[in-house]
Image 1 (cartoon, helix red, strand yellow):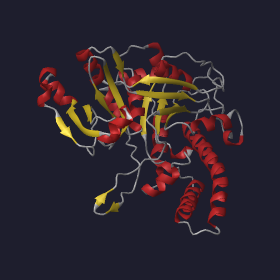
Image 2 (cartoon, rainbow, N blue to C red):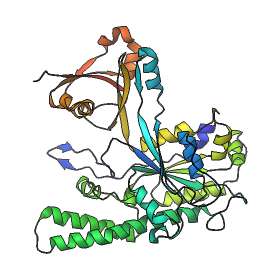
Image 3 (cartoon, one colour):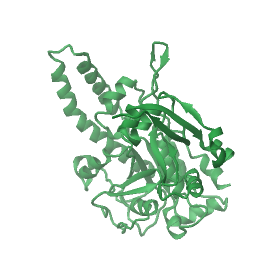
Image 4 (tube, helix red, strand yellow):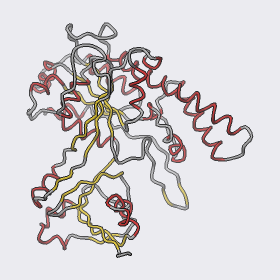
Length: 394
């Protein structure tokens, strides 16, 4: 089965985070990145690897994708719905006036070249755009067509991967140089523990970057992550590696025929040596020519980006609207209620919760049997159907 082949390439990309024990309780591990519910994934890669074509496929937009470098000068942004059969089923049941699925913003960032951090190509501008995203779809070219030029002259995915990471690392080091100097000046005549801790975290980040260690692959405490997240380092962003194969090679995989694995193995070895990560082999060429194929991986890629950022969602349902709310994993009920309206959090009484599975099993007419009343510290589970109760106020 084709999915079995892919599963060998879906390497887990869990952040290595310390858990801090405090007063006999375990503090939930924090994540590197922006503290935002507006999820953004950026598409990054060398020029002419199929970035803009992939963006078109993911978003159904039509941005330029001609065969020459730096075609995409300004980042293209689109918001796409997250595929979720549960949401579709709930919409079918309630037939609401309004349907609001969970979404993911995708930004197409123009191709990088070696030396981008120093301003070569159009690099500096695009490296700055990467800072605004939460995670990265890193597209690697896994096909070799003579009529599609390569900025480095010859095909070498291993080299391309190194170039991208080196440019992101160089940009982080440039940023750090100024911030470290500022932090050092602040602690010269100060005993402020927070300032000292900030300097120590930046110093540690600097040491790791100079050793070519991406910050996402370093073990950090929650306190360190809180300080790092004020800076949004490029190498701290989680990545999904998309290997863009030729249509011919992809169809061989579908037919379970023998393929040339030199590019796949090349990329897998690099990813393994550089902290691991999820790898998805696909073919933009195949997807473009077979938009409705059952073998399409477009929905898989979108959903993988959503899961990479470690978000879940809960549902509110009714005849007026069925809505999918995006929240961080481990969010408690009172905080989730605040997303709907701040007063819901301020005057929170309870949350009436039913899992999606129990709702389908019980049926809409007997839903009251499956409802459970939960307090403000209840941790929302993925797929919960919730009605929040709040006390009246003047």
